[in-house]
Length: 312
Image (tube, rainbow, N blue to C red; front, side, top):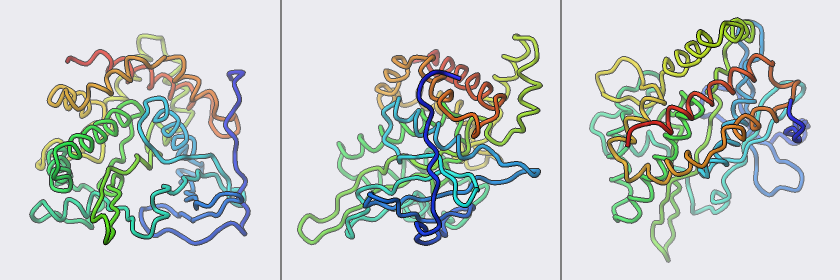
Protein backbone atom coordinates (compact mmCIF):
# COMPACT_ATOMS: atom_id res chain seq x y z
CA UNK A 1 0.00 0.00 0.00
CA UNK A 2 1.04 3.57 -0.67
CA UNK A 3 1.54 6.07 2.12
CA UNK A 4 -1.03 8.33 0.48
CA UNK A 5 -4.34 8.78 2.25
CA UNK A 6 -6.80 6.00 1.50
CA UNK A 7 -10.33 6.74 0.32
CA UNK A 8 -12.90 6.97 3.10
CA UNK A 9 -15.76 4.51 3.52
CA UNK A 10 -19.06 6.17 4.39
CA UNK A 11 -21.17 4.20 6.86
CA UNK A 12 -24.76 4.89 5.86
CA UNK A 13 -27.43 4.98 8.52
CA UNK A 14 -30.80 3.46 7.70
CA UNK A 15 -32.45 6.77 8.61
CA UNK A 16 -30.70 8.37 5.64
CA UNK A 17 -32.43 6.11 3.11
CA UNK A 18 -34.98 8.05 1.08
CA UNK A 19 -36.34 5.69 -1.58
CA UNK A 20 -35.40 2.94 -3.99
CA UNK A 21 -34.38 3.40 -7.62
CA UNK A 22 -36.06 1.23 -10.25
CA UNK A 23 -33.75 1.76 -13.25
CA UNK A 24 -31.04 -0.83 -13.81
CA UNK A 25 -30.45 -4.37 -12.62
CA UNK A 26 -29.16 -3.83 -9.06
CA UNK A 27 -30.81 -2.85 -5.80
CA UNK A 28 -30.34 0.88 -5.33
CA UNK A 29 -31.48 3.43 -2.78
CA UNK A 30 -31.48 7.20 -2.74
CA UNK A 31 -29.65 8.47 0.32
CA UNK A 32 -29.75 11.86 2.04
CA UNK A 33 -26.31 12.50 3.49
CA UNK A 34 -26.09 15.05 6.31
CA UNK A 35 -25.05 18.54 5.21
CA UNK A 36 -25.61 17.89 1.49
CA UNK A 37 -28.55 19.27 -0.45
CA UNK A 38 -28.15 16.68 -3.21
CA UNK A 39 -29.23 13.05 -2.76
CA UNK A 40 -26.79 10.20 -3.39
CA UNK A 41 -27.60 6.87 -5.05
CA UNK A 42 -26.35 3.84 -3.11
CA UNK A 43 -25.74 0.71 -5.20
CA UNK A 44 -25.03 -2.65 -3.58
CA UNK A 45 -22.18 -4.71 -4.99
CA UNK A 46 -23.43 -8.00 -6.36
CA UNK A 47 -22.57 -11.40 -4.97
CA UNK A 48 -21.06 -14.15 -7.12
CA UNK A 49 -20.34 -17.70 -5.94
CA UNK A 50 -20.81 -16.60 -2.34
CA UNK A 51 -18.43 -13.64 -2.47
CA UNK A 52 -18.88 -9.91 -2.93
CA UNK A 53 -17.69 -8.69 -6.33
CA UNK A 54 -15.58 -5.56 -6.63
CA UNK A 55 -18.19 -3.30 -8.19
CA UNK A 56 -17.90 -0.81 -5.32
CA UNK A 57 -14.15 -0.29 -5.65
CA UNK A 58 -14.38 -0.38 -9.45
CA UNK A 59 -16.99 2.39 -9.39
CA UNK A 60 -14.70 4.50 -7.21
CA UNK A 61 -11.60 3.86 -9.32
CA UNK A 62 -13.51 4.69 -12.51
CA UNK A 63 -14.63 8.03 -11.11
CA UNK A 64 -11.16 8.93 -9.85
CA UNK A 65 -9.55 8.12 -13.19
CA UNK A 66 -12.23 10.22 -14.91
CA UNK A 67 -10.98 13.07 -12.73
CA UNK A 68 -7.42 12.54 -13.96
CA UNK A 69 -8.66 12.51 -17.56
CA UNK A 70 -10.86 15.57 -16.90
CA UNK A 71 -13.94 13.71 -18.12
CA UNK A 72 -16.97 15.21 -16.34
CA UNK A 73 -18.43 12.49 -14.14
CA UNK A 74 -20.63 11.70 -11.18
CA UNK A 75 -18.93 11.98 -7.81
CA UNK A 76 -18.52 8.57 -6.16
CA UNK A 77 -17.61 7.39 -2.65
CA UNK A 78 -17.19 3.96 -1.12
CA UNK A 79 -19.98 3.12 1.31
CA UNK A 80 -21.65 0.45 3.44
CA UNK A 81 -25.32 0.14 4.28
CA UNK A 82 -26.13 -2.13 7.24
CA UNK A 83 -22.85 -3.96 6.68
CA UNK A 84 -23.36 -4.43 2.93
CA UNK A 85 -20.70 -3.05 0.58
CA UNK A 86 -21.52 -0.64 -2.19
CA UNK A 87 -20.79 2.79 -3.62
CA UNK A 88 -22.72 6.05 -3.56
CA UNK A 89 -23.01 8.40 -6.50
CA UNK A 90 -24.07 12.04 -6.09
CA UNK A 91 -26.96 13.31 -8.21
CA UNK A 92 -26.00 15.94 -10.75
CA UNK A 93 -26.48 19.50 -9.51
CA UNK A 94 -28.41 20.40 -12.67
CA UNK A 95 -31.23 18.04 -11.69
CA UNK A 96 -32.11 20.25 -8.73
CA UNK A 97 -33.85 22.43 -11.30
CA UNK A 98 -37.37 21.09 -11.87
CA UNK A 99 -37.10 22.20 -15.48
CA UNK A 100 -34.12 19.92 -16.12
CA UNK A 101 -34.36 16.24 -16.96
CA UNK A 102 -31.95 13.44 -17.73
CA UNK A 103 -32.76 11.99 -21.16
CA UNK A 104 -31.09 8.60 -21.54
CA UNK A 105 -29.60 7.22 -24.70
CA UNK A 106 -32.38 4.71 -25.29
CA UNK A 107 -34.98 7.49 -25.45
CA UNK A 108 -32.79 9.52 -27.78
CA UNK A 109 -32.19 6.61 -30.15
CA UNK A 110 -35.83 5.51 -30.11
CA UNK A 111 -36.68 8.96 -31.47
CA UNK A 112 -34.31 8.87 -34.43
CA UNK A 113 -33.52 5.23 -35.33
CA UNK A 114 -36.40 3.42 -36.99
CA UNK A 115 -37.43 0.31 -35.06
CA UNK A 116 -35.13 0.98 -32.12
CA UNK A 117 -36.32 -0.96 -29.05
CA UNK A 118 -35.76 1.38 -26.10
CA UNK A 119 -36.71 -1.36 -23.59
CA UNK A 120 -34.32 -4.05 -24.78
CA UNK A 121 -31.75 -4.51 -22.00
CA UNK A 122 -29.47 -7.21 -23.40
CA UNK A 123 -27.81 -7.70 -26.80
CA UNK A 124 -29.17 -4.42 -28.13
CA UNK A 125 -27.19 -4.56 -31.36
CA UNK A 126 -28.90 -1.42 -32.66
CA UNK A 127 -26.85 0.44 -30.03
CA UNK A 128 -24.02 0.98 -32.50
CA UNK A 129 -21.54 3.81 -32.41
CA UNK A 130 -22.90 5.11 -35.71
CA UNK A 131 -26.42 5.21 -34.26
CA UNK A 132 -25.16 6.99 -31.15
CA UNK A 133 -23.59 9.60 -33.40
CA UNK A 134 -26.84 9.84 -35.34
CA UNK A 135 -28.69 10.41 -32.08
CA UNK A 136 -26.28 13.17 -31.05
CA UNK A 137 -26.75 14.83 -34.42
CA UNK A 138 -30.52 14.68 -33.98
CA UNK A 139 -30.43 16.25 -30.52
CA UNK A 140 -27.78 18.90 -31.14
CA UNK A 141 -28.75 20.74 -34.30
CA UNK A 142 -26.33 23.66 -33.94
CA UNK A 143 -22.83 22.94 -35.15
CA UNK A 144 -20.91 24.13 -32.07
CA UNK A 145 -23.22 22.26 -29.68
CA UNK A 146 -22.96 19.12 -31.77
CA UNK A 147 -19.16 19.37 -31.81
CA UNK A 148 -19.05 19.74 -28.04
CA UNK A 149 -21.40 16.78 -27.56
CA UNK A 150 -19.41 14.52 -29.88
CA UNK A 151 -16.20 15.52 -28.15
CA UNK A 152 -17.77 14.73 -24.78
CA UNK A 153 -18.85 11.29 -25.99
CA UNK A 154 -15.33 10.69 -27.30
CA UNK A 155 -14.17 11.31 -23.74
CA UNK A 156 -16.57 8.62 -22.52
CA UNK A 157 -15.08 6.17 -25.01
CA UNK A 158 -11.51 6.96 -23.95
CA UNK A 159 -12.42 6.55 -20.27
CA UNK A 160 -14.17 3.25 -21.01
CA UNK A 161 -11.11 2.01 -22.90
CA UNK A 162 -8.71 3.00 -20.15
CA UNK A 163 -10.66 1.27 -17.37
CA UNK A 164 -12.21 -1.45 -19.60
CA UNK A 165 -15.76 -0.42 -18.77
CA UNK A 166 -18.00 -2.98 -20.49
CA UNK A 167 -21.34 -1.46 -19.48
CA UNK A 168 -21.83 1.64 -21.64
CA UNK A 169 -25.31 0.47 -22.64
CA UNK A 170 -28.05 2.79 -23.84
CA UNK A 171 -29.14 3.82 -20.34
CA UNK A 172 -25.56 4.55 -19.26
CA UNK A 173 -25.17 7.78 -21.20
CA UNK A 174 -27.55 10.70 -21.33
CA UNK A 175 -28.30 14.31 -22.19
CA UNK A 176 -29.22 16.99 -19.66
CA UNK A 177 -32.20 18.89 -21.07
CA UNK A 178 -33.50 22.12 -19.54
CA UNK A 179 -36.81 23.49 -20.80
CA UNK A 180 -38.22 26.88 -19.85
CA UNK A 181 -40.75 29.33 -21.25
CA UNK A 182 -38.19 32.13 -21.22
CA UNK A 183 -35.15 30.41 -22.71
CA UNK A 184 -36.61 27.48 -24.62
CA UNK A 185 -34.60 24.23 -24.64
CA UNK A 186 -30.96 24.05 -23.60
CA UNK A 187 -29.13 20.71 -23.84
CA UNK A 188 -25.69 19.29 -23.10
CA UNK A 189 -24.18 15.86 -22.63
CA UNK A 190 -24.55 14.63 -19.06
CA UNK A 191 -21.43 13.78 -17.07
CA UNK A 192 -20.32 10.16 -17.32
CA UNK A 193 -21.76 7.74 -14.78
CA UNK A 194 -21.98 4.08 -13.78
CA UNK A 195 -18.46 2.68 -14.19
CA UNK A 196 -18.73 -0.37 -11.93
CA UNK A 197 -18.21 -2.94 -14.70
CA UNK A 198 -14.49 -2.47 -15.15
CA UNK A 199 -10.97 -3.63 -14.25
CA UNK A 200 -11.73 -7.33 -13.70
CA UNK A 201 -13.87 -6.49 -10.67
CA UNK A 202 -15.85 -9.74 -11.01
CA UNK A 203 -12.91 -12.15 -11.32
CA UNK A 204 -12.14 -14.33 -8.27
CA UNK A 205 -8.94 -13.11 -6.58
CA UNK A 206 -7.65 -16.71 -6.55
CA UNK A 207 -7.75 -16.79 -10.35
CA UNK A 208 -6.09 -13.40 -10.64
CA UNK A 209 -3.41 -14.58 -8.21
CA UNK A 210 -2.64 -17.55 -10.45
CA UNK A 211 -2.29 -15.27 -13.46
CA UNK A 212 -0.08 -12.83 -11.57
CA UNK A 213 2.18 -15.65 -10.36
CA UNK A 214 3.05 -16.69 -13.92
CA UNK A 215 6.38 -15.64 -15.49
CA UNK A 216 6.34 -12.00 -16.58
CA UNK A 217 6.02 -12.71 -20.31
CA UNK A 218 3.11 -15.08 -19.72
CA UNK A 219 1.52 -12.72 -17.20
CA UNK A 220 1.75 -9.78 -19.61
CA UNK A 221 0.16 -11.91 -22.29
CA UNK A 222 -2.65 -12.82 -19.91
CA UNK A 223 -3.23 -9.13 -19.08
CA UNK A 224 -3.37 -8.26 -22.78
CA UNK A 225 -5.71 -11.19 -23.47
CA UNK A 226 -8.03 -10.12 -20.68
CA UNK A 227 -8.04 -6.47 -21.76
CA UNK A 228 -9.00 -7.34 -25.31
CA UNK A 229 -11.62 -10.02 -24.65
CA UNK A 230 -14.27 -7.92 -22.89
CA UNK A 231 -17.51 -7.14 -24.71
CA UNK A 232 -18.89 -3.64 -24.27
CA UNK A 233 -22.36 -2.12 -24.45
CA UNK A 234 -21.77 -0.40 -27.80
CA UNK A 235 -21.70 -2.40 -31.04
CA UNK A 236 -19.55 -1.78 -34.09
CA UNK A 237 -22.17 -3.15 -36.50
CA UNK A 238 -25.84 -4.05 -36.16
CA UNK A 239 -25.21 -7.62 -37.32
CA UNK A 240 -22.55 -8.29 -34.66
CA UNK A 241 -23.46 -10.88 -32.05
CA UNK A 242 -21.40 -9.18 -29.34
CA UNK A 243 -20.71 -5.64 -28.24
CA UNK A 244 -17.38 -4.16 -29.23
CA UNK A 245 -14.39 -4.42 -26.93
CA UNK A 246 -14.11 -0.93 -25.36
CA UNK A 247 -10.36 -0.68 -25.99
CA UNK A 248 -10.64 -1.69 -29.64
CA UNK A 249 -13.71 0.52 -30.13
CA UNK A 250 -11.91 3.61 -28.84
CA UNK A 251 -8.80 2.98 -30.94
CA UNK A 252 -10.90 2.51 -34.09
CA UNK A 253 -12.91 5.65 -33.33
CA UNK A 254 -9.71 7.66 -32.69
CA UNK A 255 -8.56 6.80 -36.20
CA UNK A 256 -11.89 7.54 -37.86
CA UNK A 257 -12.73 10.79 -36.04
CA UNK A 258 -9.37 12.24 -34.98
CA UNK A 259 -10.64 15.78 -34.39
CA UNK A 260 -13.01 14.74 -31.60
CA UNK A 261 -10.34 12.65 -29.90
CA UNK A 262 -7.45 15.11 -30.20
CA UNK A 263 -7.93 16.69 -26.75
CA UNK A 264 -8.32 13.26 -25.15
CA UNK A 265 -5.12 12.06 -26.79
CA UNK A 266 -3.41 15.04 -25.19
CA UNK A 267 -4.88 14.12 -21.80
CA UNK A 268 -3.66 10.54 -22.18
CA UNK A 269 -0.20 11.69 -23.17
CA UNK A 270 -0.02 13.76 -20.00
CA UNK A 271 -1.10 10.95 -17.69
CA UNK A 272 1.51 9.63 -15.30
CA UNK A 273 1.28 5.84 -15.14
CA UNK A 274 2.42 5.94 -11.52
CA UNK A 275 -0.46 8.29 -10.72
CA UNK A 276 -2.91 5.73 -12.11
CA UNK A 277 -1.37 3.10 -9.88
CA UNK A 278 -1.87 5.38 -6.87
CA UNK A 279 -5.58 5.70 -7.68
CA UNK A 280 -5.89 1.95 -7.12
CA UNK A 281 -3.48 1.98 -4.18
CA UNK A 282 -5.78 4.35 -2.31
CA UNK A 283 -8.56 1.75 -2.13
CA UNK A 284 -8.57 0.46 1.49
CA UNK A 285 -7.26 -3.05 2.14
CA UNK A 286 -10.63 -4.05 3.60
CA UNK A 287 -12.29 -3.22 0.29
CA UNK A 288 -10.10 -4.93 -2.31
CA UNK A 289 -8.09 -8.15 -2.40
CA UNK A 290 -4.35 -7.74 -3.12
CA UNK A 291 -4.69 -9.84 -6.28
CA UNK A 292 -7.51 -7.64 -7.58
CA UNK A 293 -5.52 -4.50 -6.81
CA UNK A 294 -2.41 -5.69 -8.63
CA UNK A 295 -4.30 -7.04 -11.65
CA UNK A 296 -6.30 -3.81 -11.99
CA UNK A 297 -3.02 -1.88 -12.00
CA UNK A 298 -1.57 -4.18 -14.64
CA UNK A 299 -4.66 -3.66 -16.79
CA UNK A 300 -4.40 0.12 -16.48
CA UNK A 301 -0.76 0.00 -17.52
CA UNK A 302 -1.66 -2.06 -20.57
CA UNK A 303 -4.62 0.05 -21.70
CA UNK A 304 -2.71 3.30 -21.26
CA UNK A 305 0.12 1.93 -23.40
CA UNK A 306 -2.31 0.79 -26.09
CA UNK A 307 -4.14 4.10 -26.21
CA UNK A 308 -1.07 6.31 -26.26
CA UNK A 309 0.53 4.22 -29.01
CA UNK A 310 -2.61 4.08 -31.17
CA UNK A 311 -2.05 5.30 -34.76
CA UNK A 312 -3.04 8.87 -35.53
